[in-house]
Image 1 (cartoon, rainbow over the protein chains, first blue to last red):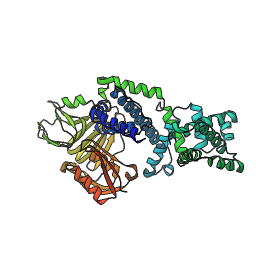
Image 2 (image 1 turned 90 degrees about the vertical axis):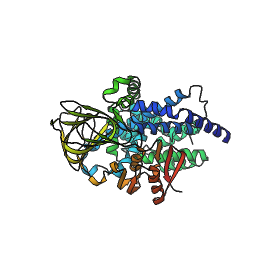
Image 3 (image 1 turned 60 degrees about the vertical axis):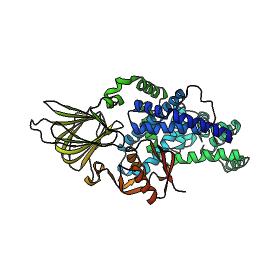
Image 4 (image 1 turned 30 degrees about the horizontal axis):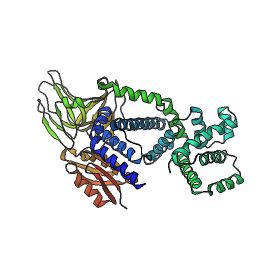
Length: 168
Length: 319
């Protein structure tokens, strides 16, 4: 749909020139950091551009921009939480098991994705999925570990796979 | 393909097959049936392939580490949406209450001295000490008869402290803690709720605000600290501190780190494509003319710099 793409591009271009400066100083106020603010302002517009569905941007574009930006700020905090948890975890590991700094980023990227994927799922679904996909347990082993029936394990796995398919 | 485009029936069937495949009891017949299912249409094949790639990545991380990290993170409220939203809500309405730990731009405006992006400013302090303020930084200078105190609100500075006739202590305070100088030359930097003190000459005693312990740093040592914790002090090469001369000396530095340093000295956005983020770069780069530094990068490395606007640049692999 080239015409729709074009009109979205034009809208975003217009938004960018009208509100980018404002959004960036808004983020700067919230985050207290210029580089992060610039980064997230950029990501906010990028998010607008890559939205698959063209929705009318409405008469309050700044409300939409701050809505997206808040989501990105939360995302960033989640990532920081994971990174902190990672650092605490490796602090407790024997030196031989600590991944090299080069692989750290790869691992963190994957953990961020897993967390984002499982974020909205119930805790037990999350745990079931992790035991299967990360620890490599069979459903029978998971059923024993969590003290639930095989059917229940399958139900949790199905829910989690639906979540995977929905983001993939 | 986006989730909204997957036919719900295909999605449900794919989930059923995935459940079977990962049960630990999948048979050869199952695999055959899945292969058949996948070949029914491009949409079937694509849905399957994408989720397999995703799951394959998950199995690439060390199991023990991944489980512990995710459990630790979720225990720590990090993953609860409601709590995160509360945290966000509080921060968004807190305003001046957050002042103690969060620097606010109005503080910068009321600061005694500040620099714009890309600017450096040399200040002579009342006692004869020199303060070089780096890009996008703000300080308050609070000297009194008892002490010489400089508050670094944001950014970075280099202090060359002079001997004081009244023997008053020289203290640099950041939002995260204090650095107590003893006849010395040192850099202090604060950003992202983290401070860093690097000592070039003499000694500096570093104390995070919420900790009782201090660390004494000597020349060639640096330490990063937050409000409530300090990292171990590390040795660094004194020669690599060159921002006071308008230069950045990279020695086998990651490209994304180099770019984020350059970003501090220029307005707008400077992004690094993930495919080239890990490239190692060595060389001397101008901080006063960052356009020239970027040109140098694109001339010597297989990089392309795409400009969306003058203030929005992305460094990407050259195709």
